[in-house]
Image 1 (cartoon, rainbow, N blue to C red):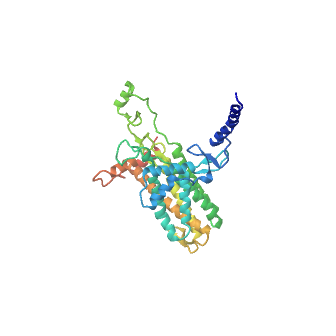
Image 2: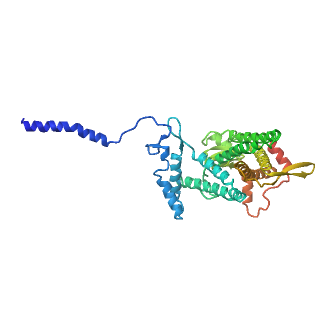
Image 3: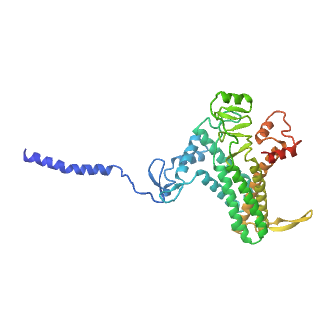
Amino acid sequence: MSYYSTSVIVVVVQQMPVRGAHCAAAMPHQDDSALCCCEYMNEDGERSHVLLAFCNCDAIDEAFERLFTLQSLERGNVKKVIDTLSDRLRIPWCGGAKKVPLDLSGAVLCVIITVFLGCFSWTLTVVTYVVILPAMLYSVHRCIRKKVTHENPTTYGAKGIRGVKYPRSRFYFAWVTVSLASLLIIYYTQVIPHVKISLYENFIFMVFTCLSCTCLYLVRATSCAGFEPQNKGVDEECEEVIESGAWRFCGKCETQVPRQATHCRTCDTCYLLRDHHCIWLDTCINCVNDRWFVIGLICGLCALCYGVHLSLTTVCHPQHLDVYFTTLLVPHRCPDAFASLQSSLSVSGACYGILLATFVAVALVQQLVCVLSGVRLREYRRRRELPNQFSCCSFRNGFRNCFVFWWRR
């Protein structure tokens, strides 16, 4: 072998590690180190940081562009925005940033905006709780409906179509929970420091509040079908049960259910003597928990009304009003309602309580009407839809219906 060929081989061998180094530098480096409290792995499997939450948001940019150009949002755009927010909405945590449920964060944001807007003037307070808050709730409901419809077009359909499942979301329950917690925080941090509420009045308020929360907790805790399901399939025993008329076969649950059980399109379960599905508690009301539901509404309405009364009579100048054999303290003039942040938050919380009390009162009236007439809310609504149906219920046996409702087994 000649000298020149040997030199060429040596040069090539010396250059090979260098080329390998260039290739290794060109390959992406896999970071296997532990995540810090603000880092997380995004939906693409890449390492990201909470400070980069609003970077490269193509779905959000497209949604705002369609809004600014007065174009309607498509169902696919809404789903992309919700998926992006649910993936990037995180809080620092040990071992990596944790996801915050979009339902909870949306409810917290809705309550904060509402209470903040109600702290400026009486006009803006009325507009906030009469227009802005209902519009926000309706917009969230529309977004939930569009997202569910995009995932499965047969999931949500027009009213009256059989076999259609209704959307389910935890936002409504989260909004009620956050609203009640916010009102309690405002009451104890802004109203109580005025030192105008006695221990006796505060004790009564807390009794109603605790009873209401306990009953509404039992509504969710005791929610069940109300019967023991039979074995699936149609064998000889099941055929005898069906022929007896006491049970029937539910095509959606594919099991034997009592004749008086109905299928909930939201829970996708059959309930015995089902009244309705309460989206605000995210559970069905039936013969098992309907009494806890009514008691919770009564105590909740008393707690809200009494809390509003204590807040307004504390911030405003009260006036004594003679009613029969007693004297009531009612708010008369509120010249300093928005003079400070403390009084503004108290007034805003009181107006928020009035709105919630209105919702609870409507639900309670519906339940009392159904109890007095001896029908379920589902049957009451069905009767109202019938043509030439002027009276949907009759109170002829009201006392007997109440006795059966409260003292049945």
